[in-house]
Image (cartoon, rainbow, N blue to C red):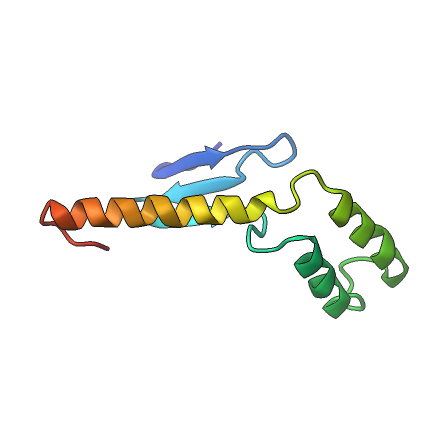
Length: 100
């Protein structure tokens, strides 16, 4: 359940608060929408010995990331967010308010 002042924008079965907005212009995700499978593999290589997973699991985890049905779609989420935020800022500016 989201606290007061938080709008839930995306949900999931494992984590019910996947994307949220706090107030009018603070957004948060429970995932990394900027990462595709290759980026995730590079990040996992950096952290392979940091305790997040057993180092011998690296290849399996990379395989799972590459097999993910959402690979590539996360960038669409970011493009849509930028387009929406830009349109809203332009509308506020045209209405005489701050662009924020």
